Image (tube, rainbow, N blue to C red):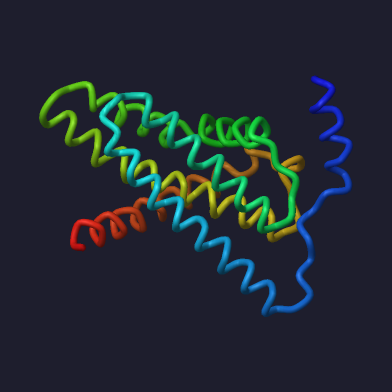
Length: 181
């Protein structure tokens, strides 16, 4: 364990999401967190348009890391890119259908024509759905008083999978609204 990780773990004992004083403050913070997630879902939809396989996945991880940073600010929590990326990769990597689906969608882009189209369409939906699930999982964790240092990805995987499935429907609706506009 690095010295930085040791220091951060020691600080983790004293760092928790601030307690809102009123129901109105709680609802406002929750609304802000949900809006952040929605905004980053729109950005994630765009990863499907990146024609290079694997580059889209890297950019998606960057978008989700930025979402975690913004949520950390909202909940007044300490955040580092290193911790954020480790938690994201652990959460995503432990849910094979999600990680595998995004990998396949990304690789389909390597095949011209129908493969590219399928890859772009699938990656848009998978990316936005994964971002939705990441947002929902961390919002729930932070609202219950958690922080990045006591987040246990293995305990959140089932909830993540459920939110990912719900997120696919939300992403499809968002994509349809974009296409209609």
